[in-house]
Every structure is written in C-alpha cells, then in structure tokens.
Length: 298
Image (tube, rainbow, N blue to C red; front, side, top):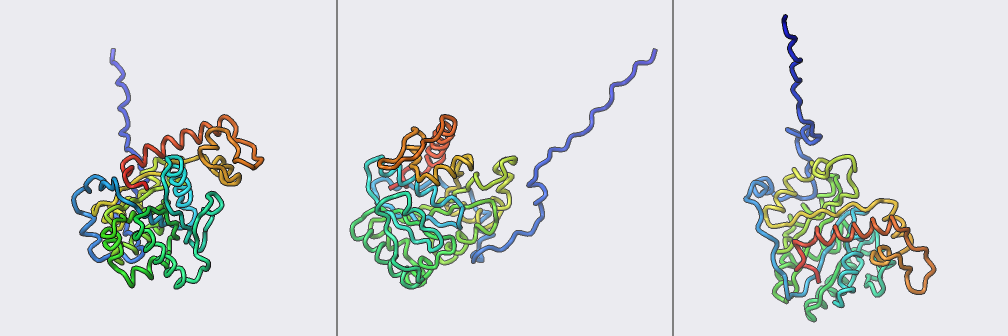
C-alpha cells in the first residue's frame, strides 16, 4: 500500500511595508549639508551628554501638530511639580497655545520676524546673564532663530561659554518633510551638544509597527547624519486621540487628568476611570522614554 505524502509546505516570505522603500530615491529636505550622506555612515553615536548641574535652554522645534506643545506642557508640569524654575516662552507665530495651559508664559508682542528675532536675542541674553533655564516653543519653519543664527552662527558655543547649555529638540511625524527643520538648522551650524529627535507615535498609522510607519524618516540621510553626530532619537508614546483632545479642550494638566481632578477655580468634569488609566499609562511611558536625557531637563 502506497502511503500518501504530506503536502509540501509553502515558503512564507516575511512582509514588511518598509521593504517597498528599498532602492527608493530619498527626498531632499530643508538645507542638508553636502556631507550628510558621509556622516550618516559614521559610527553609532555615543550616549547622551550629561548636563547635570547646568542651566539649560530648550529650543523645541517642529511643524504644527507634531506634538511640540504637548511635549512642552508635559515638561513644564515635571519642572513645576519638582519645585524647579524656568522661563517659558511661546514664539511660534502659528501656534502660541502654550499660553492657554500655563500662567506666566512670555511671548513677543508681535509676529514680525525681525522684531521676534530681537526679542529672542534679549530672552537668550537674559538666560545667559542669570544662568537660568528656559523652554522655548518655536515653529517648524522658525525665522526668528534663523535670523539670529545668521548674525551669530556660533550661538550654541556662545551659550555654552556663558553657562547655559542649549538643547535642540525636534518633534517629527512620519512625513519626510518634517525633517526640514532639523536639516535646515543643522546646515546653518546650529548643532548643540544636546540634540534630541522626538518621533511622535500618535501621528503614525496605529496598525503598523512604529519603525514601519517612520521608515522613510529613519532611513533618511538627514536623520541618520544627525544621530551619527550624537542626536538622541526618542519616541513620544501614543495617547488615544479622543483622550488627548478632551484633555486639551478642558485645559487640564496631565496630572489632574490622571487623578480625576478639576482645575482650581473651574467647573470641569474630570475624565472617566478608563481615560484616567490611559493618561496614567502615557505619563509612565513618557517618563521612561525621556529617561536617556533626564539630565537635559531644567
């Protein structure tokens, strides 16, 4: 009696969306330096620089809806809850919503690019004279910083010598064009010792692994060159959009949202128990993600 052979198993080819990008010509973004491709092939970066004991000036740079203001709101709460002090400034002419969440946020009295650049210079001079920390909310195509760099190309070195460490933080979504600010400012010579690239998972397709969703960004020479020079890539965890929208609409501090509290002096319904749990999970994830640059926080 002849035995029937079991059917031969079909070969399974792993599928990855990013595989479709192999051989694809990358887009030019911003003003990438001519050496970007060579620097992108450099050795892996060293651990994040230690800024313990120094005043820090955070330059938060990113296009609209990239998570920049959310990041600064989170950092401001960490700073204030820790009993520390910093100057908060909103300079993005397209979005100064930070003023709606925090009291005492400084902002220029005009959107005129030249006037804002002068205002920024005075603010930085104040931080340097008093060795004070600051969080600066800048736009993705910020012209005030660009104008200042045109006059003071060694801005980062000048601040370091004055005892204030500049920290450049770029917030990005999965669009390649979001790299334009990083490429442009680095091409202008703004390369502080401390640079972080924050990839916002909340802007990616939730059905894809985050590395797949950000494949074009992660493969781009502008991104790889910055990391090779020492920039620290980080992920901003995803917060359920409906929860994020409710927290924003009610102008809640994240800690109040987590604890089911209403802002003092305002009648606002607290979040429900499930959404409070989501905020708690997000806050814990944020703390873990930012741990590599903990000494960069004011």
